[in-house]
Length: 125
Image (cartoon, rainbow, N blue to C red; front, side, top):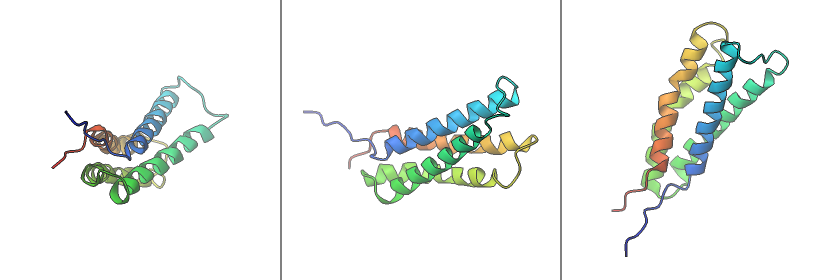
């Protein structure tokens, strides 16, 4: 009988972090292109940013310390960790001008890579 390979137990956190990041980028893009006017509810973008930071941190910490299978979870968390730098920097470097979206998009490869690694079945050896 063929055994199914187990995915990381932290996978839902990686998915949630990716969804929060994608929603934040989509809203930010819509505001920047003036498709949506958030002048009366700017807090939504801030709430999505906080949700992105919290879920990214939760996925990384869970993957590093508690999730099973250990090797696959650890790999996914290590790939996700560099996303913390641009996510942390964006709060201090200002929100107006060209560098805001560039810094925000700098987290994208790491969030995507963490998601892909968490969705991959764990190697059994």
